[in-house]
Image 1 (spheres, rainbow, N blue to C red):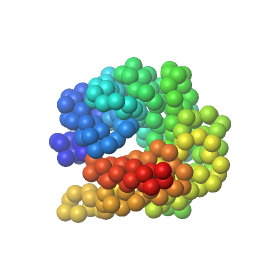
Image 2 (image 1 turned 135 degrees about the vertical axis):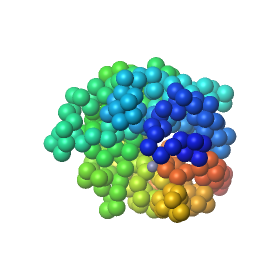
Image 3 (image 1 turned 120 degrees about the vertical axis):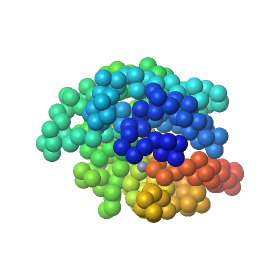
Image 4 (image 1 turned 90 degrees about the horizontal axis):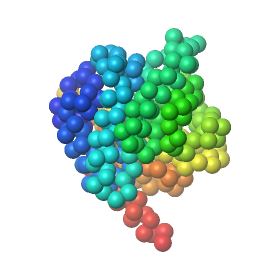
Length: 276
Ligand SMILES: [Zn+2]
């Protein structure tokens, strides 16, 4: 969405919060108008390690606070839209696989969460995680600076494991141990694979609300542009499928436009009418 509005490849998407705030707000508004009841701040990569690649490591708080304020300003024009403060992975591998120490990761996540909280988010939304240790660091960092609810979603690849080998069952166990407010899966290899992950989370006896946020299909490179092959109709059917499996918070990740959200919402509410 940001690229379609002028973000160049290689630029930090989060820089737009500071330099092109009206574009970020316009995108939030488009999703709410399409029926989103919860929006994520434009802060996925706004931790010091990722921002360092763009010379923004000294502005972690500003970037996150701005991201939260922009989403808040738009959400407040509508009744009951929730603003979730997006926190993605550091982009570094943690010890013993890489060099990132647990305490340093905690500090980086705390810094990001503090910025998001100061900008007025309703919930800390840790997403696209692959490593359980990094999840622990993110939750600990967030809780060291705010009492907001914390949710976690991990990204499962083929064969139902994250890049670091974590299973849906392990995630459920951690969600119970850390008393997360919700847990689930996001991104990954398209709606069908995510549906299987949601079923496993559900069957593992998950006691907290389940989040399902699939990519709109699989990315393909067509004439130099990244295109996702999941149509709004496919995502609408997917939304109904994950609800049947027990998901309570249903959305979409990469490649999903407001049009996808509109169809998904219609499908879910139509479904609800049938149940009544
Ligand atoms: Zn994604």
